[in-house]
Image (cartoon, rainbow, N blue to C red; front, side):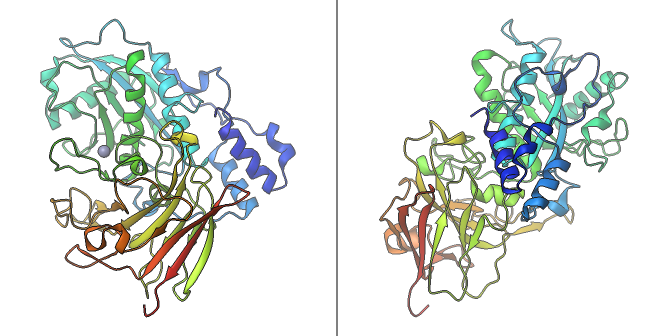
Length: 464
Ligand SMILES: [Zn+2]
């Protein structure tokens, strides 16, 4: 998998008739790095074929590729960009009274976990998952806070800690390098803390700056940042990395798909093997829905069932290549921020490798309307935080899995209102009350084709 990034580039170049040019495209210009920081550009590791945003943009134009804009394209003032280049600092912090054990890895190791040019790192995951659309870089800093951990256990306290760190490093670091798009906001910032404080306060989460409006360093303001209590030890590397993958999804604008209110251990929003999603259980990859929202799919990859077609067959490539089939409510213009069904074909490749042995087709019910509740921050109308959200989790949700908990669909399967639980299932259009009604179509899973794509047939019922 190490060469997947380069492989995508080669495919792009071959489509553009530029195969011979692969060797001429190299990494981006080195960013200025701080003396005590470990910079991503210093790495002598094998290249993954990372190219700059501008080069990628030119390649896409040569290709005639037209990307569907990110759902957050006009909201960059509140989010980290999900397309192009972003950069951020990672602060691994200790306190006067609470420190890591001797198993703590050195900053260069943490830098490899987060920014390494391989498919295991956080940056490698985003590069590959985004099909080359998003490139992350940054630096790792170790810092010992002046106070004890309890001194920082409040919203104001954690902001005070961030300001303390930034002010400490200000003389030697130009923090404007972490504002790639020049919107005067730090793209993001990661604060990594040791276990030993109040565990009800220090859990992994994306925070939004609000106590200290007006604070800036080198002309950039903090906004969305991440606090993580995953530990920088070799044995906890997997958690360290997967938590950052999830929280960075929030920095770009994605909501949680899991349930905040639940009984027992049933927190997942999408159950079973077919329910793996980075914003649900922090496993596997992002779904095609998340990738559509993030601006990682082309118009060609998003196939739409025509409103006037009675039946149509689609050739659906594996999600590792990118692509989905969408079905919108009858009589409605396609709106990626509205309600629709999304069909995707998941194979045990890429970041789903090892998650399951076979994979298959899954159908997601989407309601992606966005709104502002405070006149400023936009978010999903039916996310967990929203006043429109039914906290029983049984009403309208941003994302539900059809045939939830029962695995993938395979060749010969038919998805119908009746065999997915009827009104008690997830295969139907929402009513205003949050119940569902017969969608008026069914989905048949056809054969796998020579090119690895699978046939998907959408059939509208007569009389609809
Ligand atoms: Zn989350």
